[in-house]
Length: 219
Image (cartoon, rainbow, N blue to C red; front, side, top):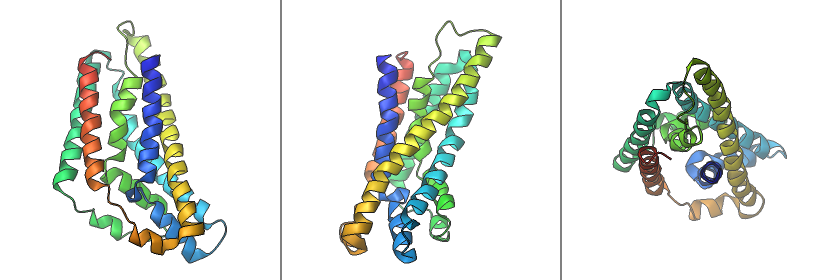
């Protein structure tokens, strides 16, 4: 139970981590709100970013939740997922350029931008080792009926993980966006812009390595 609790806290923490990262879109929400000059513009922009991020998380987690019914391959799936996250982190360390397609999306399409940004930066992959740890299969969960029950449970868990993560991400990014929008302004943002690209890539490598380690250790 302690391990599961820690993993859920990891889901929440990763959401806050994604939320404070400008690359996940909160500056776009501030910009959209300043341009529209409407009271509901900022919440609307944040909601669209959250919707796109949630869909990206589900798009990554669902295939793994369906694979986990293959009980005998649980460790191999977790190890493979961990290495996939590591590879993504190494790739982002080598290739520092942001995907050009993100710059070609109209600012009004924030949900689409958020979905593609989360995919391109491996945000969903960061959740995979944590998710697989939560869905760890016990030795007694063997058999056709147990596998079906497990698969259904894991699909529900995938949605819950994506939801909890997205809510925490939106809260973190939303607080920063509100402060910038109401008090500091875009000039402050342009002067104090911080780049988390290297930290982001290294965190992917770290999460992937942790996922591989805990899978091999049987946790």
